[in-house]
Amino acid sequence: MPMQYLFTNIIGAFVLDDKFHIVDSIPFIGNEYEFKTKTENRLRDKHKNLIPLPVEKYVQASSIFKDPKYAKEFFQKNLVITKQAIKDAVNEDNLIIQTVSNLNELDKTSNMLTKRLREWFSLYLPEFSQVVQNHEKFVELVTSLSKKELMKDIGITKTMGADLEEVHVNQILLLGKEIETLYKLRAQHEAYLQKIMKKYCPNLLELAGATIGAKLLELGKGLKRVALLPASTVQLLGAEKALFRHLKTGSRSPKYGVIFQHPLIQKSKKKDRGRMARSLADKLSLCARLDFFKGEFKAKEYRGMLEVKMNSR
Amino acid sequence: MPMQYLFTNIIGAFVLDDKFHIVDSIPFIGNEYEFKTKTENRLRDKHKNLIPLPVEKYVQASSIFKDPKYAKEFFQKNLVITKQAIKDAVNEDNLIIQTVSNLNELDKTSNMLTKRLREWFSLYLPEFSQVVQNHEKFVELVTSLSKKELMKDIGITKTMGADLEEVHVNQILLLGKEIETLYKLRAQHEAYLQKIMKKYCPNLLELAGATIGAKLLELGKGLKRVALLPASTVQLLGAEKALFRHLKTGSRSPKYGVIFQHPLIQKSKKKDRGRMARSLADKLSLCARLDFFKGEFKAKEYRGMLEVKMNSR
Image (tube, rainbow over all chains, first blue to last red):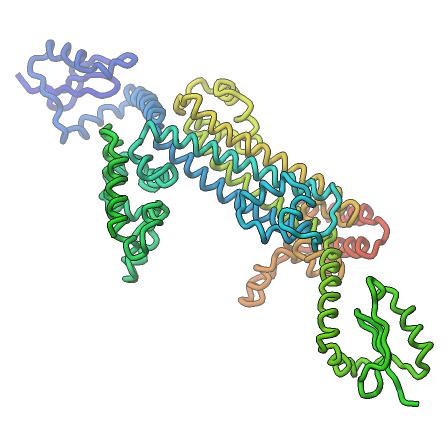
């Protein structure tokens, strides 16, 4: 008795002869593909000589399905599956990446607008902008105090600023109020980021902090990939430009990417920072792995080890 | 009788002999400098041979005031005058320039944040961003309608977007609401700009519109300078880069700067735009002059002339 192939795909289970003609078939209805073994067994009972189609013959066998009779169904079922796959593909990674990108943009925005506010407000009270360097503080004071109160605050009784009418000052304050809401939004987003990271990657959150942790996920394109990256790559995430310059021109290799902002590196002495970055990246990499493979919570322990290391130098 | 010089400056009126020694003086108290003629006349009555100090002898005479006795007072009075001058230097030009710069930055900001909103929201309902291209409309709909309503709006019943929990959707909507307030602020600033320009430069406002008019003032550094610029320069304000490229490399000369956005140019046929730009810049220049020298309101008339010109082609 000649050999027959069993070929199962999303539209049904097919029995093919050695010339790749369809001998028998059971089409799938609805989501039957997910329980294909049942259907396959029915065919196996009927045709005794069935073997699964070898992989190298897939291309030949597939050509059957160019027939419009199957092609349309193939296309539609594929579409449904793909759409579902896209739907299912959204996970915490995407949410975290969107949130941290948005935080970056909110920072850019409020910086730009605060600079404008400083310049604009300086027509009114130029002495104030110099004294209060912190952007957020500046916005807060300008929007909440009167010109007299501000002058008293910085200890001056006369100003070079113009005595603008209320209609003009109001416009400046409207901008200030807007910037305040941007700062508030940033705080809300950051609290949210903490919250989802606490669930999704508690180790990474604990050791890296929300901002650096999320940036690592952004640069590494998700927790899975960060978990699979070597620690030395984690160390340099965010330093790609300097790394390629190093590779191309032989300039000194970078020692850290976004982890440079980490308190453990910031608090280290300058000459120890390279070594510290390597140790930190090591532990961060372990954290990502623990989080991805649903391991235990060890980040506090790691942090302790790193702190001991820092203080022993 | 020997010649004596009368030399008046901010600290007082002085009578000098021909060796530049002080013979007599009356110091100014408070703002007496502003009424100096009165003081000078008192000295003229006392000293009959007084002539005003010739300009070429100012340097010699000024050396007297290096004496610490005068120098300190000189310095202090100068400081007061300078501060007052700075205070007085703030005029509508500054307010308009700050406002229009701010409008530009608000535009940049809301563009950047809306792009982020589109990307973020597309995790939830990707089909919607493609259908609604207009940024402001997109933000308005997303913040005011539910997912179901939005899907109905664009006529779909299934989406590839993930079924996000409320905690995630809320963060996206917070960003949307923030962008809405940015759009509102922009509208308020623009109304304000209209209002001050209506008073300060009604002709320019009428013919150029608030945005282009204010940009011309920004690029031309104030109404006075715009009024004194040749019309051909007004035509090219905002096209400096292209102009210098033209001068340097001999590429084609630019035909318009910011006035390119003007409806009269936009509505003209492509081949007529250069000529239209020249005529428009001519009239805009006249408008700026009328406004600066407090002339009559002629912008409507000019607009009519330009429209006739456009339609006659």
